[in-house]
Amino acid sequence: MLTVDALKRLHVSVSFELADGECIALQGPSGVGKSLLLRAIADLDPNEGSIKLDGTLRESMPAPTWRKKVTYVAAEPGWWADTVQEHFIAWDEALNLVEKLGLPSGCGTWPIRRLSTGEKQRLGLVRALLLRSRVLLLDEPTSALDPASTASVEAIVAERVSTGTSVLWSTHNSAQARRVGSRLFMMSSGRIEEHRF
Image (tube, rainbow, N blue to C red):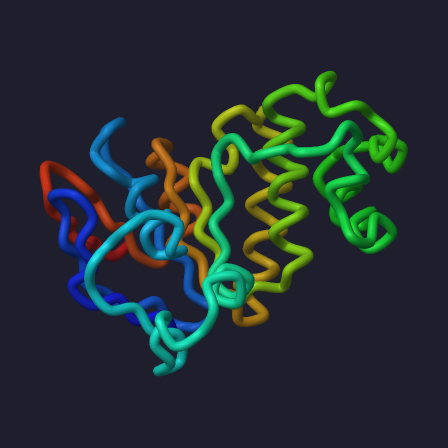
């Protein structure tokens, strides 16, 4: 279980628990701080408060270890090498997920510069899924995808949730929030309200 207690980032203070195998949808207007919240939980940006995973404080482990357990997936993932497969330790392990997300197995040799935003989003998600993180913090993971690709992403994430992965999923799409989340956190002007579906 992920426990967030009085997490402060800018003007927002948040406390909640995210159970194993639970997906919470996160919504709010652009600029309200959804990405900042996700990044703070992942310990990518300065913040105050207490975050625990199964009772273990975030500060008690090295940041890279925390980030492998509690993984942030950006809406626009970063790329640092020339081709797709150079971003994966074991490309062969990635292939099953790549194909489930509607990309061809040969995309490993593609140059990064030729990828669309949607292809980058799907491949960024594959990178995160291969870490087998306990918690996924998804920042608009389908914002650049067509309905079929969106459905594929939702199905793969739901599969992970069913095996115990916890997910906090930021989306502007209310229908998607209802499909993926058991609860909804609505952010607005410095506060979060919880709603159940």
